Image (cartoon, rainbow, N blue to C red; front, side):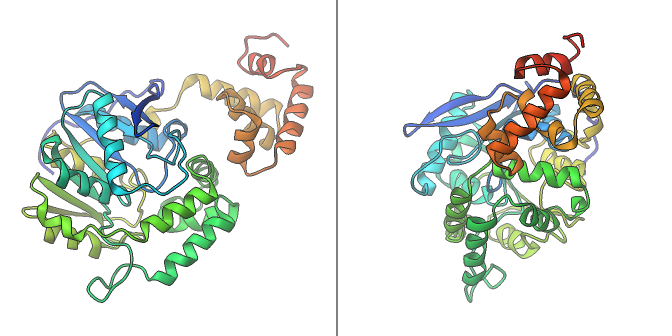
Length: 378
């Protein structure tokens, strides 16, 4: 990395407000944060949920670290997270329209575009089609072609994709599936029960089982290899050496086929960018766009004093599952949304709420939250 300031941020901030961009009659959810000179659009992998992301301090710290050198633009792709659901799979043209609509709504005429994993093909397509709107292209763990052929032997087989689709349809969001998913995507966190629980919620509220399966069908058809020689913007490809999801072969292929592309290989086996040595990854992205480095990602700076006090109170009064339910109530979620997040039935959510009300000696959500926040005397 080049020399420069070490950016360690004071991150006691509220999550950014979610806004919506109109694209093809759909609403695409996005957030902006930071006010540094350059704009940077972050295209996530597979599914995301803008608001739930801020509930995991390491992910919040990862996003906020970008604000030391850029105004960050985040969005949920159509069919996922807080964006409108769709009845049919989107084509690449529709996805590019969504990205362009988000940039327009955020007031970004041009931006550095960072594409992660499944988000990288969209970033590549956009940079090839609209180079005037892309100052830099950064690809982390890119997937230029998803299905194996004789001339691309390191991709997964058609049978592998069929098994993934079936598993999504039948087991998406279940505890056993999520444990395996974390072991694959974020091995550093596979024994962290809090992470596994949050990741399961993040995935379930990022997409339904049917939507996840449809996205996997679409992803199995990814092939943007013909676009790579057309890229004319400054490009950096970043890989982790032992990534279990996207092997370095994919990244090396992309770097070799984009004219003038720079290739960076970092140590690590985690695929999720905010897991493992996130500081090294954000620093590599900062260097790629010409910003000072290193950049420090420090999750300990994200903890909210109010949330800590809230958690302390509910830990004293409620059971583990009742605490989980009340945390979602505090976020304003409905019983249906809480049931989806916790992978239980709505009747189970109602039962936990009734038990919580009894223990707190209250009769409603509003008074329960007031009691737990300390604004209602016992």
